[in-house]
Image 1 (cartoon, rainbow over the protein chains, first blue to last red):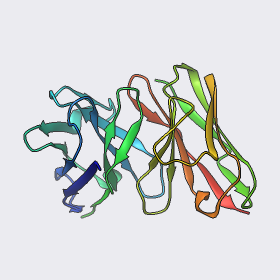
Image 2 (image 1 turned 60 degrees about the vertical axis):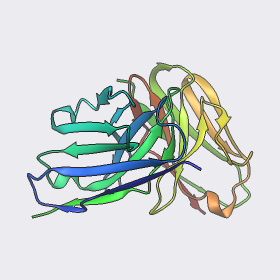
Image 3 (image 1 turned 30 degrees about the vertical axis):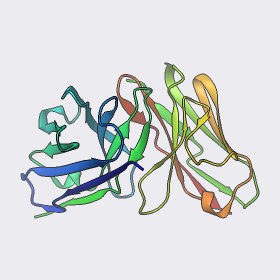
Image 4 (image 1 turned 60 degrees about the horizontal axis):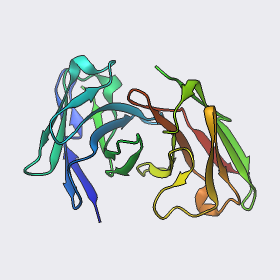
Length: 117
Length: 106
Protein backbone atom coordinates (compact mmCIF):
# COMPACT_ATOMS: atom_id res chain seq x y z
CA UNK A 1 0.00 0.00 0.00
CA UNK A 2 1.41 3.34 -1.05
CA UNK A 3 1.75 5.95 1.68
CA UNK A 4 2.98 9.51 1.87
CA UNK A 5 4.74 10.67 5.00
CA UNK A 6 5.50 14.35 5.41
CA UNK A 7 7.44 16.37 7.91
CA UNK A 8 8.85 19.83 8.54
CA UNK A 9 8.90 22.74 10.95
CA UNK A 10 5.49 23.75 12.24
CA UNK A 11 6.23 27.20 13.65
CA UNK A 12 7.99 29.95 11.74
CA UNK A 13 8.60 33.64 12.19
CA UNK A 14 7.76 36.15 9.47
CA UNK A 15 10.40 36.33 6.71
CA UNK A 16 11.67 32.79 7.42
CA UNK A 17 11.65 29.94 4.93
CA UNK A 18 9.12 27.12 5.16
CA UNK A 19 10.64 23.73 4.45
CA UNK A 20 8.65 20.50 4.13
CA UNK A 21 9.53 17.06 2.81
CA UNK A 22 7.32 14.19 1.73
CA UNK A 23 8.47 10.59 1.38
CA UNK A 24 6.77 8.02 -0.81
CA UNK A 25 6.58 4.52 0.61
CA UNK A 26 5.66 1.76 -1.81
CA UNK A 27 4.61 2.04 -5.42
CA UNK A 28 6.25 3.72 -8.36
CA UNK A 29 7.83 7.15 -8.17
CA UNK A 30 7.59 7.79 -11.89
CA UNK A 31 4.47 8.58 -13.86
CA UNK A 32 2.96 10.98 -11.31
CA UNK A 33 2.96 14.63 -10.36
CA UNK A 34 4.23 14.96 -6.79
CA UNK A 35 2.17 17.78 -5.46
CA UNK A 36 1.93 20.32 -2.65
CA UNK A 37 -1.40 21.83 -1.61
CA UNK A 38 -2.25 24.10 1.29
CA UNK A 39 -5.39 24.93 3.25
CA UNK A 40 -5.56 27.99 5.50
CA UNK A 41 -7.56 27.43 8.69
CA UNK A 42 -11.26 27.26 7.88
CA UNK A 43 -10.69 27.85 4.17
CA UNK A 44 -10.44 25.92 0.93
CA UNK A 45 -7.68 24.10 -0.91
CA UNK A 46 -4.96 25.88 -2.88
CA UNK A 47 -2.58 24.08 -5.21
CA UNK A 48 1.00 25.22 -4.63
CA UNK A 49 2.95 23.27 -7.21
CA UNK A 50 4.15 19.91 -8.45
CA UNK A 51 7.18 18.04 -9.69
CA UNK A 52 7.70 14.79 -11.55
CA UNK A 53 10.44 12.21 -11.11
CA UNK A 54 12.62 13.90 -13.73
CA UNK A 55 12.54 17.20 -11.84
CA UNK A 56 10.17 19.00 -14.17
CA UNK A 57 8.07 21.34 -12.04
CA UNK A 58 5.03 23.59 -12.28
CA UNK A 59 4.13 26.29 -9.80
CA UNK A 60 1.05 28.30 -8.92
CA UNK A 61 1.69 31.69 -10.56
CA UNK A 62 0.56 33.50 -7.43
CA UNK A 63 3.32 31.85 -5.39
CA UNK A 64 5.93 31.18 -8.06
CA UNK A 65 8.38 33.86 -6.95
CA UNK A 66 8.66 32.31 -3.47
CA UNK A 67 8.51 28.58 -4.18
CA UNK A 68 11.02 25.88 -4.90
CA UNK A 69 9.96 22.26 -5.25
CA UNK A 70 12.70 19.66 -5.57
CA UNK A 71 12.89 15.90 -5.86
CA UNK A 72 15.29 13.19 -4.71
CA UNK A 73 14.43 10.08 -6.68
CA UNK A 74 17.03 7.95 -4.88
CA UNK A 75 15.11 8.48 -1.65
CA UNK A 76 11.65 8.77 -3.27
CA UNK A 77 11.20 12.13 -1.62
CA UNK A 78 10.12 15.57 -2.74
CA UNK A 79 10.38 18.85 -0.91
CA UNK A 80 8.83 22.29 -0.73
CA UNK A 81 10.52 25.53 0.18
CA UNK A 82 8.48 28.71 0.52
CA UNK A 83 10.50 31.76 1.39
CA UNK A 84 9.64 35.07 3.02
CA UNK A 85 6.62 33.67 4.83
CA UNK A 86 4.00 35.90 6.43
CA UNK A 87 0.99 35.23 8.63
CA UNK A 88 -1.02 34.79 5.44
CA UNK A 89 0.96 31.61 4.76
CA UNK A 90 -0.37 29.95 7.92
CA UNK A 91 -2.04 26.78 6.70
CA UNK A 92 -2.12 23.01 6.72
CA UNK A 93 0.22 21.88 3.97
CA UNK A 94 -0.47 18.57 2.24
CA UNK A 95 1.70 16.55 -0.06
CA UNK A 96 -0.07 14.47 -2.64
CA UNK A 97 0.24 12.19 -5.65
CA UNK A 98 -1.26 13.64 -8.78
CA UNK A 99 -2.18 11.47 -11.73
CA UNK A 100 -1.69 12.49 -15.34
CA UNK A 101 -5.47 12.51 -15.71
CA UNK A 102 -5.62 15.38 -13.21
CA UNK A 103 -6.83 14.02 -9.90
CA UNK A 104 -4.84 13.73 -6.68
CA UNK A 105 -5.40 10.19 -5.57
CA UNK A 106 -3.19 9.99 -2.52
CA UNK A 107 -2.66 12.55 0.23
CA UNK A 108 -0.30 12.96 3.13
CA UNK A 109 -1.75 13.60 6.57
CA UNK A 110 -0.90 17.29 6.47
CA UNK A 111 1.39 19.56 8.44
CA UNK A 112 0.10 22.66 10.18
CA UNK A 113 2.53 25.50 9.62
CA UNK A 114 1.96 28.59 11.73
CA UNK A 115 3.70 31.86 10.99
CA UNK A 116 3.81 34.12 14.02
CA UNK A 117 6.21 36.58 15.53
CA UNK B 1 -7.79 30.29 -15.62
CA UNK B 2 -10.90 28.19 -15.23
CA UNK B 3 -12.84 29.07 -12.08
CA UNK B 4 -14.96 26.45 -10.34
CA UNK B 5 -18.12 27.44 -8.46
CA UNK B 6 -19.90 25.03 -6.14
CA UNK B 7 -23.49 25.18 -4.97
CA UNK B 8 -25.03 25.22 -2.56
CA UNK B 9 -22.46 26.35 -0.03
CA UNK B 10 -24.26 24.33 2.62
CA UNK B 11 -26.69 21.46 2.20
CA UNK B 12 -28.77 20.47 5.23
CA UNK B 13 -30.17 16.97 4.93
CA UNK B 14 -31.13 13.98 7.03
CA UNK B 15 -29.56 10.52 6.90
CA UNK B 16 -31.15 8.47 4.15
CA UNK B 17 -31.88 11.49 1.97
CA UNK B 18 -30.37 12.10 -1.45
CA UNK B 19 -27.68 14.77 -1.79
CA UNK B 20 -27.04 16.60 -5.05
CA UNK B 21 -23.96 18.82 -5.19
CA UNK B 22 -23.20 21.07 -8.13
CA UNK B 23 -19.89 22.22 -9.60
CA UNK B 24 -19.88 24.73 -12.43
CA UNK B 25 -16.84 25.73 -14.48
CA UNK B 26 -16.31 29.18 -15.96
CA UNK B 27 -15.60 27.55 -19.31
CA UNK B 28 -15.96 24.12 -20.80
CA UNK B 29 -13.55 21.53 -19.45
CA UNK B 30 -12.64 18.02 -20.42
CA UNK B 31 -13.69 15.01 -18.40
CA UNK B 32 -10.90 15.58 -15.89
CA UNK B 33 -13.21 16.67 -13.07
CA UNK B 34 -12.69 15.12 -9.67
CA UNK B 35 -14.54 15.21 -6.36
CA UNK B 36 -13.07 14.96 -2.88
CA UNK B 37 -14.51 14.49 0.59
CA UNK B 38 -12.89 16.11 3.59
CA UNK B 39 -13.75 15.56 7.24
CA UNK B 40 -12.53 17.82 10.07
CA UNK B 41 -8.87 17.30 10.85
CA UNK B 42 -8.35 14.97 7.92
CA UNK B 43 -6.82 15.21 4.48
CA UNK B 44 -9.17 15.21 1.51
CA UNK B 45 -10.05 11.84 0.05
CA UNK B 46 -10.58 11.24 -3.66
CA UNK B 47 -14.13 10.11 -4.38
CA UNK B 48 -14.65 10.54 -8.12
CA UNK B 49 -12.24 11.10 -11.02
CA UNK B 50 -12.81 11.60 -14.72
CA UNK B 51 -16.27 13.01 -13.91
CA UNK B 52 -17.89 9.67 -13.16
CA UNK B 53 -15.35 7.06 -12.07
CA UNK B 54 -15.38 6.03 -8.43
CA UNK B 55 -12.00 5.86 -6.75
CA UNK B 56 -10.81 2.75 -4.97
CA UNK B 57 -13.05 1.63 -2.09
CA UNK B 58 -15.63 4.35 -2.66
CA UNK B 59 -19.15 2.93 -2.16
CA UNK B 60 -21.62 2.95 -5.03
CA UNK B 61 -23.93 5.46 -3.33
CA UNK B 62 -21.48 8.09 -4.61
CA UNK B 63 -21.83 8.94 -8.29
CA UNK B 64 -20.61 11.70 -10.55
CA UNK B 65 -21.99 13.06 -13.79
CA UNK B 66 -21.87 16.02 -16.11
CA UNK B 67 -20.05 17.53 -19.04
CA UNK B 68 -18.97 20.85 -20.45
CA UNK B 69 -19.41 23.34 -17.62
CA UNK B 70 -21.89 21.59 -15.31
CA UNK B 71 -21.03 18.67 -13.08
CA UNK B 72 -22.84 16.90 -10.26
CA UNK B 73 -21.91 14.69 -7.34
CA UNK B 74 -24.82 12.63 -6.07
CA UNK B 75 -24.97 10.71 -2.83
CA UNK B 76 -28.00 8.46 -3.26
CA UNK B 77 -28.74 7.87 0.42
CA UNK B 78 -26.75 9.72 3.04
CA UNK B 79 -24.99 7.67 5.66
CA UNK B 80 -23.89 9.30 8.96
CA UNK B 81 -20.25 9.25 7.81
CA UNK B 82 -21.09 11.23 4.64
CA UNK B 83 -21.66 14.51 6.46
CA UNK B 84 -18.54 16.40 5.46
CA UNK B 85 -17.07 18.95 3.07
CA UNK B 86 -16.95 18.21 -0.64
CA UNK B 87 -14.67 19.83 -3.20
CA UNK B 88 -14.58 19.58 -6.96
CA UNK B 89 -11.30 19.96 -8.84
CA UNK B 90 -10.10 20.20 -12.40
CA UNK B 91 -6.69 20.40 -14.00
CA UNK B 92 -6.45 23.04 -16.70
CA UNK B 93 -3.62 23.88 -16.91
CA UNK B 94 -2.97 23.10 -13.25
CA UNK B 95 -5.17 21.87 -10.41
CA UNK B 96 -7.92 24.25 -9.31
CA UNK B 97 -10.42 23.51 -6.57
CA UNK B 98 -13.92 24.76 -6.05
CA UNK B 99 -14.78 26.51 -2.76
CA UNK B 100 -16.58 23.48 -1.37
CA UNK B 101 -20.03 22.38 -0.28
CA UNK B 102 -20.69 21.45 3.33
CA UNK B 103 -23.19 18.64 3.80
CA UNK B 104 -24.56 18.97 7.31
CA UNK B 105 -27.09 17.07 9.35
CA UNK B 106 -30.52 18.69 9.36
